[in-house]
Length: 298
Image 1 (cartoon, rainbow, N blue to C red):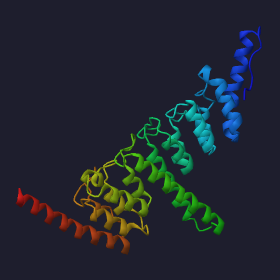
Image 2 (cartoon, rainbow, N blue to C red):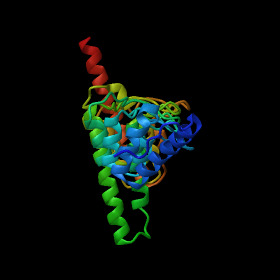
Image 3 (cartoon, rainbow, N blue to C red):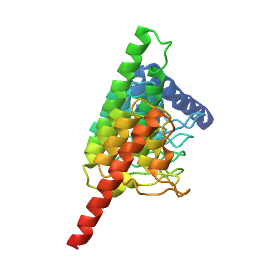
Image 4 (cartoon, rainbow, N blue to C red):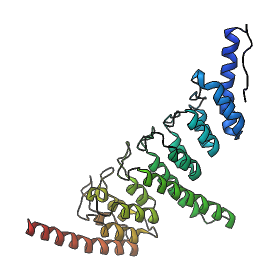
């Protein structure tokens, strides 16, 4: 299907004007999910290098299609030659957007087509697509903890949460690194999961690491390890289990932060804090014992 072709003798200015119109209309078709029209418009603008033309927010038609959750149009645009690594005014690529919104089907399309992708590309906040998915999952957990939600709202949030988990698994299985740090705070996905008490993702990432990198568990962000952050959680229901998980996976309770505090010094007052301090004392003794054994062998 051809949208428009200039008749013989039509001036260059008019052709240019119509071409610009086609560039804009491709964004509209992508947003509205008009697949046949989008495909025809893509054919029209491709010779003009218009597949990656940007609208006022810096989004290409592909980025618009991703945001609009139009998986079929995402497929067509990538196959037509759209740049899969193009970014908008916030530095977000198609992967960042699909991960942030939890669009697992769209993400699957992008990952499955075999075009070169930068899984570690960072947006202007310093986040990789995997970081974006984890932060979005954390935000949903905070929403789910709201007491005033209806049963239907809880159901919707749970479905969104499961889609985001699918996005996280897709990214990891495709090769996204759990060790990447964000530019601004030096945090990894481990710090992100701990800061919001996201026990399911914490367990997932620790199991993925499986002692491969001791640094992963003990990396510092703003001077604090994940164990510092877990110990400091103010009365969170998952605090005790998170501390136990981190210790079981090699977190060192003797490490000090920029204020010279160990995780045990970060625990809040009260009964919950006492339980955390007890765990950290046991962990500190175990850590010292293992260190002595290693030194004796060397």
